Image 1 (cartoon, rainbow, N blue to C red):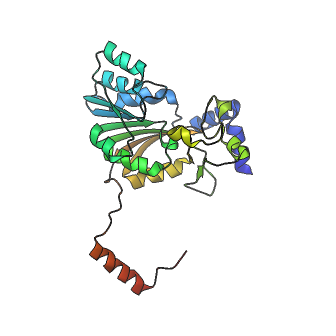
Image 2 (image 1 turned 45 degrees about the vertical axis):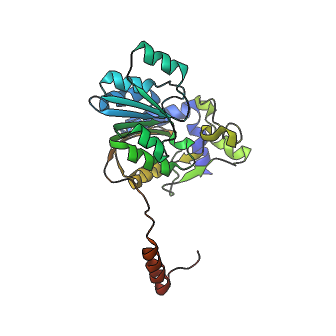
Length: 270
């Protein structure tokens, strides 16, 4: 019940503003969407750069920012596009920005795009039904630095790494996560019922910041810096480990493992 009241307060413009001021007084880095160009300009110069989810509402804007900042190669990746605005700007500015149509969580898309020193992924994670798989894909793509911005939900006291699965919630359940009062005008799967036809346009997951941070660590990243907001986070991450993957054993190894587990008597139904 207390968590519900906290959500209601944070979803009001005044409550959200008071929260930001409180976090600033604590010397937290309070973030905003408008700071994305700042991060791109900080990390892109002299590096290859990829923007995953580069089209929706921005028409490749951050790819062009990276190019103007001095990135050596720039690739935009998205599941739709390129938009007419993107193509017109690329011609007008004689840009070398390359566009790859594809789902980055699929290996063939990464193979076509190639790896990049710096990867930006903004507004994508919560739209993916398997967010951890997406983070592993970003790790495969990324050689040095990941800039990840994502919608999140507030931490749940006493329950770290909490998450909410939005599809199939009741109307009342969806209303709890509707952010229209803060200017988010459309949340497919929340402001209206989940529709499979909307695909990745749906909001699938409400992840707490602690949940995202833990998934980043498992995927092979280290969070170096975080800019916080009541319903969003920006993570600046370095690459510290190989991408997580589970290797299937050979048939001989699988049989040996099965015999070992049977002998130990630890395989019990949960």
